[in-house]
Length: 414
Image (cartoon, rainbow, N blue to C red; front, top):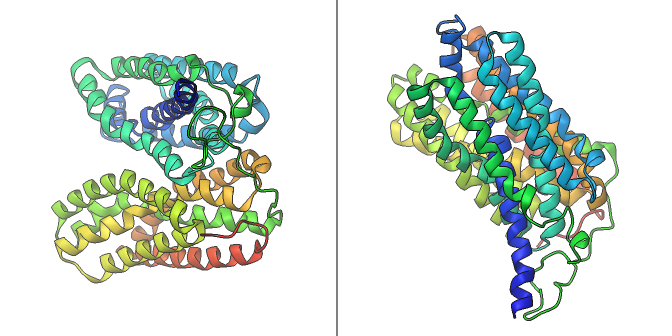
């Protein structure tokens, strides 16, 4: 029994370490970024014009997506810990150096280096490790791990905001650097490995032995959907919804056009709650219903939310629409991870997922400016909502199509 507890402890260590990496690379670096824009813009002489400063986050996110594509080449069993340590050192150092910026050139350069370091220890590495270590309830465990970025953002944003108000944004960046090291410490210090086999273990399954011994290894998928059209459709499915995930940023403005600005503020709060809860829900759904059905259900719910927002302009209905649309954050994160695991072999996952993740990042970066541009051109938000609805419906068709194309190449769904 003691041996079993020690063995299970290894899996808990892996889960804790991966949660820490997500909390630092996205929770601290990205999800707390907004509180710095205004103070930095004011200090550097831009007044209330924060667009130039917020461009640093766009640079961070794009480099983040590109560096994730290097994970498959850089991270091996022997290099796993050195890469995590080196990336953490660079991530913490660039965050600390941001506190010394006196101009935008250095701010942009450090943002790029920061994004590069974060991309090496974020969702590509984390989902690869989770998929190798856990062969049971993978969807729920993946969603729990990925959801730590949102939880960390919710927890640390008010803390950093208080530091900014009390000691200034430069001190807050120094505090963020220390927090990154603390959150990544389990991945650097705990005795974990890239794969369970490297630690003399087997992937954890629901039918693990009740006492002593190693958990039995699950049969890995040997089939692999190698058609380039499958890859393109899979990337299109999650990228289209990632584009739509920029819509909640417009909720306040959309509600204002209805004369319900305070409702728009409440809609933003609803979305923040659903952001984390929806990921956990989708993770559980993929384990119980399969990836294809879960994606179709989520897309249908998002489409219903958009229609409701377009047609019913009363506070209660708008809050409900925000809750439904809030599932748009689950598809580009949990959905992207699970569809990759469903359609592609484990050997190709670390090469395929970064490409799909790049499409997700680019689509998300383009979403807000393009939806805003449609509003500027038409004078209303109907066009932006119609485009979002069309993309979600196209995604549903793409899900059906990609699974038909990959028929026989993936495991049957439950």
